[in-house]
Amino acid sequence: MCELLGMSANTPTDICFSFTGLMQRGGHTGPHRDGWGIAFYEGKGLREFHDPNPGCSSEIAQLVQRHPIKSQIVISHIRQANSGRVCPENTHPFRRELWGRYWSYAHNGQLKGSRELKMEGSFQPVGTTDSERAFCWIMNHLQQRFPKPPRSKTLWRYIRTLCDQLRERGVFNMLLSDSRDLGCYCTTKLCWITRRAPFKEASLKDTELCVDFEKETTPNDIVTVIATDPLTTDEEWTHLKPGDMLVFRDGLVV
Amino acid sequence: MCELLGMSANTPTDICFSFTGLMQRGGHTGPHRDGWGIAFYEGKGLREFHDPNPGCSSEIAQLVQRHPIKSQIVISHIRQANSGRVCPENTHPFRRELWGRYWSYAHNGQLKGSRELKMEGSFQPVGTTDSERAFCWIMNHLQQRFPKPPRSKTLWRYIRTLCDQLRERGVFNMLLSDSRDLGCYCTTKLCWITRRAPFKEASLKDTELCVDFEKETTPNDIVTVIATDPLTTDEEWTHLKPGDMLVFRDGLVV
Image (cartoon, rainbow over all chains, first blue to last red; front, side, top):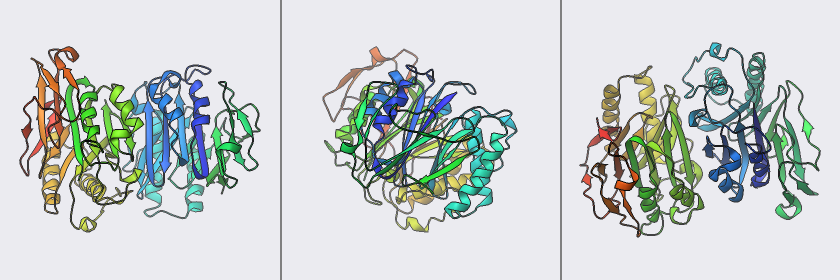
């Protein structure tokens, strides 16, 4: 299995604190040693870091932890390989372009018979994971159904029906973004928390690190963090139910 | 204008030495302060680092200089913006997927009337540069012409005719790869050198750094480096002529 981390914020925000917690699970407090990746949207641009090495000992992960990249949407993933060998092309998040937008995607779970997902369209997987195959299957369906980008509500309603189909094949916890919204689909494990004024302190579960968000933010900031398992011990995370889909924009559910 | 750097090798090789030279030109020995990027192919996978900050002072660039990533094909770019503002989505190299392969592309030059390049196909630019527009134009033509991937020779012959058309709009020095070959097209400035046994020492032009390739390589290694301007002072670089296109695989011209 794997773990997911996502962020949606109404102002460019760094994710150093949460990412530091997640990386511990990449071989230290968790068994997810088979690579990690993170994608930062900066406006329409998408900046990514990938490493097939364990997150807990990765020099690149250490840079990302101490180098605050400000972003409104982030998707991150640590991998414990089950489908597809450990190599760069199998390292999440995956990226494609559609309608002049970069799409980023990461998946936690396992899909049975993913080979049966027909690649009818121009998007083809590069690696060998069931995850990337499911992503290309979604992208091909979007491209066929909407020659031009639809309204956000129509788009995510349709994506939900696609996720419902994938869910029939097994475990499909997913984060997906088109650079505007962050969609989160849950079949087994996904939880979230929204931080806004009055901000408090929070302590990581996986390493001794505490942050006082009051000092790091302005009163108008709204920052939502989504994760497979709660990353902090002193905050209340909301758990999604199987089949739930939430779409965030600017840190709020839309 | 901008500067390009490319590598093709017959064995996974790091590009730390050449990249260190190039980064000096990103605001120190050269005026290319408007971001930089580098793409490493590792098998079919593509790992990228981008930064809209100047290369000479970028913390991410420093990591790439000291962290040897072994690759057989590399494309790098430092930018001096002329078309499109300085932001992540305008930072080369650009990436798209076609036929289950990642394509990476960087461009040096300026194209007149790039808006006239019709985007007939599914590839659309995300940013606002003439460079990315030309890349999407090439990708759309490839997709329309070849529903399935053709033989390498047929592919690059066709890409050459596309480059010849782009050249009519101005300066089009380009590096392009489909994860198998590295194509280099020259209209004004591009040069290359192939290093193979017996290896010698080389000194960077832009900073005091010397390397003895004899110690870094095995006798079977073949490594070709392509750059806008020669990166070393004590080697003989071959200059491409306007309209020249070279395609490298495993460090050799094919």
